[in-house]
Length: 165
Image (cartoon, helix red, strand yellow):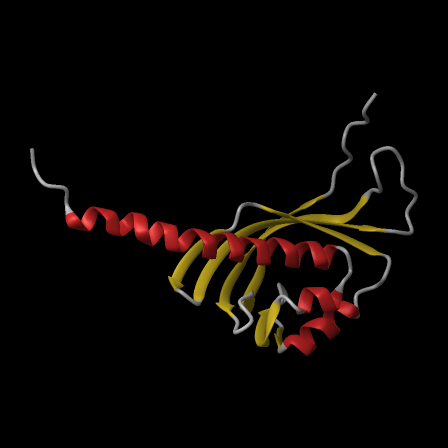
């Protein structure tokens, strides 16, 4: 019987170190999307570093937490958005830095439309895209986004869903 490989435990240790970082980064990404959908511009911006950069799907860059908050606060109050996220794929690059790739399906609606048993109708196209994120661990122990590139890759006209009996 051969002796256990001394290096065999190393990947397990690395995985054990990565797991809480992966979880915290995913939580940051999902919470930021939820806050955007709730129209909480300040709450969303708090998930970004002070010096964050955010590239909007139209290619425009927002520089800094204050600019991100202002851009999202300027959204029409009646706009409803729902970011449906696939599980973010997180790559831990260092104990205080990570990358993430998240697929996004975005549907929008108008709160002024009447709501029925199936909710409100969506407006415009369904958009499929992604977030390419860089995250950093702050001195307060919270993971925040410091660079996000958001882009759309596919779009399609919204078609009526079948009515439920």
